[in-house]
Length: 437
Image (tube, rainbow, N blue to C red):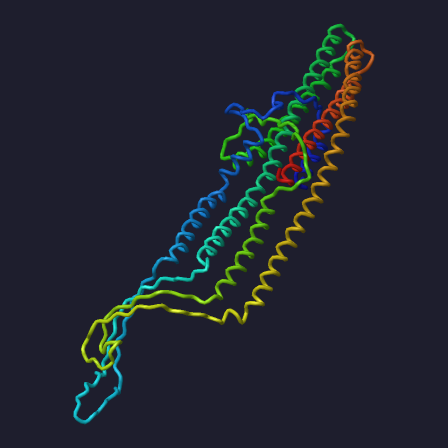
């Protein structure tokens, strides 16, 4: 979209430059294609790419990918056999004593010890591990799209800087044309002075106007440097006065279809809730696992009458079912559904606002196209008047002031056209950026 700051700047240049004599756009910085330029030039697409590469936030992309790999790898190990080691040492105030006449039954010691290890293997994963991995991948994709959204905003900032500098380049070129017109007038006035038909005061007026155009060039170059310095910071490149910013051609076709990373992020968030909903469901299923436990104990865990430290083992199946999740299952699903609807509402709001912006930008494009058609006619008429004035000045029909007025009138017309041309391109590329196409 067109940012207010850039529009204000363009019109500020338009107003402040009205006093200077401005000529027409040349093609030195206006190539008709965005082919690969020399080392001393940049296309708009190159600026987009270079800015994204050099923006510090881009480093997160690799970190997100690595984090996803580590997380998925850890989750995958959840189906591996689980091994645990436990031990206890206790002393109790009393133990069971059994007395049977004629039999000696050993009494268990009050100090008791147990050290064992257990290996267990789940037999009823029900796809829980696979579901957790899918959620982890989806969460990483959401982070990537959120990063893409933030990096996408760079295009708008690059548009402001690139087209702002491009406008100044056009004005500088026009200023040079105006200087040539003034120099032509000076030559004609000098000839008249030599012939004794004009005065030095007329020549001095033209010299003063020439100095004003030089001053205007100085102001424009300072403004360009401010823009290119900021652009260079984004690109991590040094942009000098000699660096050419290649004027892009108009986009081949503008469409109202929206393909923004924000939409992909919304879709992934909706998918995340669907995956979480299924995980909540299968987490409430009973869990079955096989286990093997072996260790030593005093008394033996398998023979409580043993008074010696003996080894033991046992193996079997274990069934567990935590029904606590069933108490909140229904409300959890309703919360999940509400969250999905919230995401859909946010997505619809984003589409509405973006569509509104696209319509405004398209209206601006049509307006500038119509203005440029009128500008072309005005420039042709003003150029014709200026040529006639040059002849009249040489013949002494008009004075220097009249000639300068006609030069400045043509310069103003050319400046209007250049401003509208840059604004048209800016609106077209803002439309392209807003739609994400």
